[in-house]
Image (cartoon, rainbow, N blue to C red; front, side, top):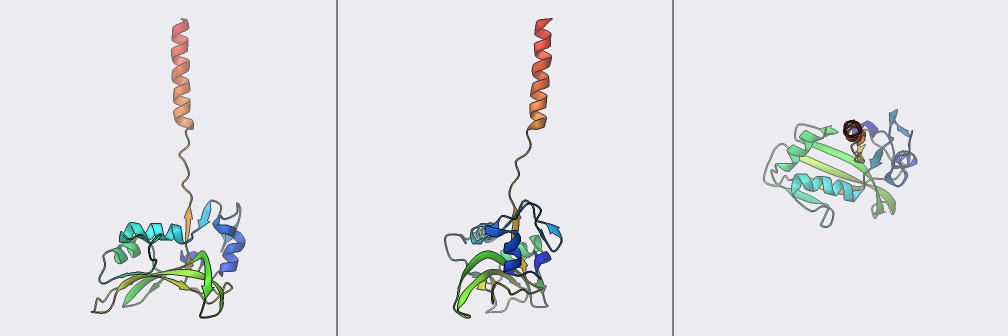
Length: 174
């Protein structure tokens, strides 16, 4: 995630238009062939595994006091911002929407926060938040990517079946 923190939305979109990264396309020297820049549906589905909440069809913003899902999430994924009070993972999505703060269409970022010190009013949270603009980048932000599931090659089982067939057909002729 944080390998691409210095890149803007436009930088990533040039290599991964509509989410699918081009064959041979690189970001910060990493080959992005086979990678997909995640949108809200993909990120929401992944977050639902941790929270048990439907982030795709329900609200994306979500918070829980002293949760078990936030530390579990940040153990599975490397946070890109940590201080003595909290760990955060912030990533730019391919999603863009109207940002009333700046009066333009801007990218969205998804923030996951795990507060270490519980307190009465401190909650672990997931927030969908607009970034300042499409050409904006920040080193402690990342981007959400995943690989499409690659089917297991069936060549070995096919070879075994073919050899078995050949073996049996030779024994029948003899």
